[in-house]
Each structure stands twice: as C-alpha cells, then as structure tokens.
Image (tube, rainbow, N blue to C red; front, side):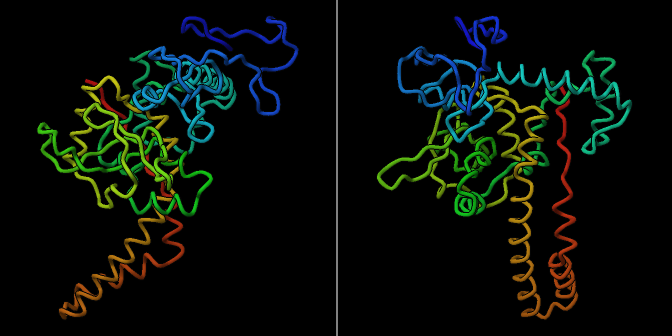
Length: 326
C-alpha cells in the first residue's frame, strides 16, 4: 500500500516485484523518506504516522487531525481513516460470508435499538453488517458517560496501567474548565475529546491534547474535573461538533470499541467511589438519627459490597444510542 498525491493505491507484493509481505518482524517495508506533513506540507519531525500508508502529521496538525486516526501503537502510530475504511471493508466482507452461513443469528451485543435499525435498513439501502460504521453515536449523556474519565480515574490508569493507559485515554472524553476569555460559553466547564498526549518540562508532566473553542489546548491532568458532567455541557458539545469541521462525530463502531476498552475501569472506579459515598451517608444518617434513611443506606452499601453484585455490574455493558438524523 502506498500513496501518490494523496491517492491511496493497493497492489499485491508480487505485482511490484516483492516476494515478501509489506511487514516483516513487525517492521514496515515501506519508503517513508517523505517527511512532509500530509495536511499542511511542512517538512518537520513526524509526530503521528499511519501504520499502513505514508500519511504523516506534524506537531500542529497532529492535534487538529488526530481524530482521523485510530491509534495502534503507543501515541505516535495509528491507522488513518482511508486505511481504516479498507480494513473495515475487509472485515465487512468476512462478516457477510459468516452471516450467509449462520443465517439470522445475532451478535450478543445486539440491542432492541439495533434490531429496529436493522429493520429500517431496507429503506436506507445499507447492508446489515455495515450500519455500525455508517451510523453516528448520539452525543447524549447516556453515551458520553460510557467513555467519560474523571481526573482520579486518569491518575489511577497512569499509575496502575503504565503500558496501556495512553491508548485508553486517547479517544475518551474529559471535563475541563471553560476558557475564561470565551464569552460565548455560559457554562463554567465543558466536555472535550482527548486527541493526544504529550509530556512537557524537565519533569515530563503529562498534558492531554484537546480542541476547546476550535483551538488546540494542552491540559495538564491535574486540571481535569473529578465531578460528573451536566446535560447542559452535553448540549454545548453537540453544538460544537456540529459547527466545527475539526471535530468528527464518532460512529457507533468507534464508541462501542472505546466503551469495551474502558467499561471495567470505569465500573470499578464507580464502585469504589459509591461505597465511599454510601459510607458518608450512613455516618450522616446515624449522626442525625434518621433511622429510615440509615437502613436504606446500609442496605445499598451491603448490596454493593457483594461480589455477585459487582460481577453483575461488570458484565452489564450498556448499548450505544444511535443518533437519529433529521
């Protein structure tokens, strides 16, 4: 696979005089001498490159266009949208062959929403195995909470999962303070998607790269919010995605992938914090003599402490809500 003037071409190794595949021992057999940024054309050190083709991004374009990449290796290698479409096409063709053999069997994750979507595909002309890549995930609170990371959870991932925390955080949503100079915003906080991670200074402090008010910003982890987001902040996010061409609406496929990646971490983090909250409620009700409320808090706390209840929550993976296009 190679590109010429932004046009991707794919050839068999034998057709271009190669006897081996384009990868060997995990290394690309590809001429990547062209180091000009594929977006702005600037010759500069590469900050993000495609695993399959010659597309590269410089430091400035990395933030604004990182959402066009699916991260694969660390924070510098990924698959660009064009190559990802080819990968998904191959996966779709494989799925079609499987579906023709397995009849009407549905995947375990298929929900009632998906069944209704499948039943309407006859009117849209989309094949049943392609809709997750074709439909957008709705940017509503029930979806956002599936991939929303609080500051304390990001810090836990950095400490406890040093080998994979960057991959998990990139593509998630975090809550930051609104720029004080942005008078168009009525809320004090806003939701943003993490598009990259960099380190600065002599102590290599970690910064999350985001787009805020259409401007790239580097946000230190210490400045992330550790509270829940609001419905008003979701509405601001929907408006910003609709008005900014640099922000890409995530598909159902992308949202489900990130949800599966984060579900266990988010659920365990919620269980720990909920047990702390319930303990505080127990202490308060006991101090105030609120017997009825005390019994209710005790029942909730004891239920959540049970291993079977925690296991149920971990296995209970919510379905992504599909955006209904007007």
